[in-house]
Length: 145
Length: 486
Image 1 (cartoon, rainbow over the protein chains, first blue to last red):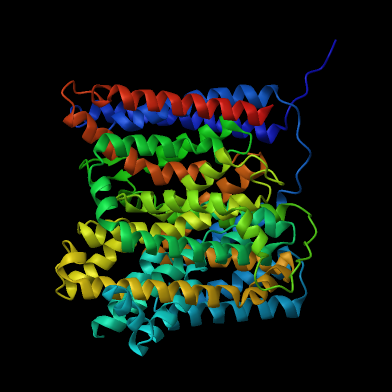
Image 2: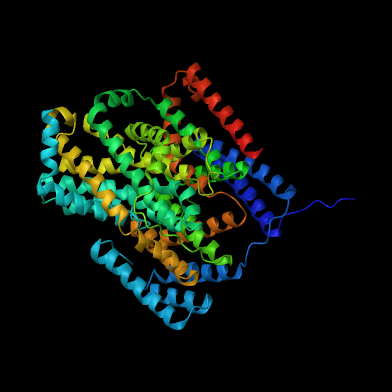
């Protein structure tokens, strides 16, 4: 008896999530088409979402049947950075200016998560913040949070 | 002959020379910053030059226009973050070249190609304006729809052997492009009551997230050692390289000029079509496309800069902007009281000034493009643990700068994570951006075609010739895709 090679759980979950997203998109397009009868606002999304589902089904079959890939590094660093970037920094930006959020993010990311040297992390945090302000706010007059 | 002498005289006038130099310099460096698009750079400078006289103002703006299109390639090559949508295709092979330690060579080559593309675009602008304008004005909705479908077939080129995953990505991009309140319908689509989504998902924010943040997160997840960058002593790539790819350059330039001249289709589409044309026509490339093929860098860089001349053709002859930047330029000219319809006949002096400013900008592009590359390459020597957080911050600020909206940062982060997961599981991210870019062109023209057709369906408007061309495109695309798999 031969054992079929399988891909990682993560890849399978991602393929299934894409399929679920496609089905949701298709359902939402049908609702939109019915709600805006005559305006054709849902026609194009409906066509696209049907294609979305079709390719997602093909992709899921492909993923479940194909050979396994080589392992690809650790996820924990990325998740920690994402948590810091999305959960902390982007939320903080709603209330705190960038010149505080930016060095804090850089210092934590470089020193705490990515284990860089203290001095290098501090220099990176403050020089990058200064450079961003100089280029965006002073030279180009782009409003920053 | 008189016109040529006038242009030559304009080239040495200080009020044209210095602003063109300053504009090109600013364009090259602003273009390299993710989030600061060419349209934004030109808009900022138009407001600054409002009080200036016509000559230096137009010279500066033209310099920025040329500089910014090239500038976008630098960050695409070094960091896989296209500085502008026109540089998306540059990253397909430019970034793999940088990963092989050839970042400097790639940037030099990109500069030379941008220069050649710009010059050929200027020549077309000078000599072919009436003819090209006539052809582009004949384009109907159905032709634009066909153009959109053809551009969508580029998925095959950017999928790197994962056709199903690429098509899925394009479908995701097209669907995400439908989110929001579009100009055609007064209906909020898929916003789920979130007011921020009413304006839709901006493809610049998506692009920064998918390419920039996604790549930074992916690099942090793997333990690949830093690549030693080779900085050659020659400042100009061997003439042999340029000469060898002359036919590809000419093909990309012609494509760039023509696509640029089509209203609504700008340098981004020109570059993508140029890349696709290179994949279809180049047979004896030493390195496969997507893995650092020089041809994959030459074609989009030549095409997107050639599109500058192309985009100015309908603007200067018909008063119709070729892309977003020329729309801003048109507004700037209107503010100055310039009647923009058939500018070539109505204001020949201004037409010649634009030509002179573009020529100077192309020359300064060579100067500023070929210098400072060693400094840029040093960026890649910064340890990954310091560089990647800096890139993430740049993505954050770049996303915010697009609309001055904090929610764009959140959206960019979401796209960043999506880009990371896609890259981790070998899904090409470029088709998602392609779908986002093409949605408006496809949907708008599909609706127009349906409304204009007597049968009330998009198929009723297709002539047999167009239908045959469509089928042929799909079949050829499929055959090529199979060949790549074999």
